[in-house]
Image (cartoon, rainbow, N blue to C red; front, side):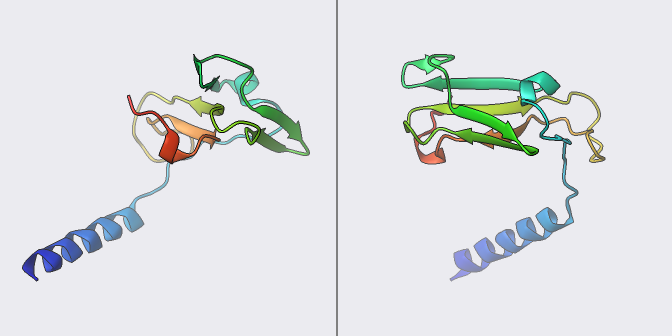
Length: 111
C-alpha cells in the first residue's frame, strides 16, 4: 500500500510540473515542403535510412500531408534543430522538434 501511495505522489508531482511548463514551438507555415524552409528530412524503409522514396508527400492549401500507409516499414519525418538558449519563447527551443512521424512507435527501432 505504501508503494502505491508513493507512486501516486510522484505521479501527481510529475503531472503538476508538466502543467506548469511552457511549451517550445517552432512556426511552420505549410506553404512549402519543410526541407525547403530550413528543416531536415529523414526517410527510409525496411532496407534502412534513405532507402526508397519515403512516404507520399503533398502540400495543398497550407497543409502538409505525409502518407506512408502503403507499407508499414516506410517512415518519413521532418525535424528542426534549434541550438542555443533554452528560453521557452517562440522559436527559441534547444530540442529537435518533429513535424510529423509516420512510423508507429511500437515498431520504431531504438538506437
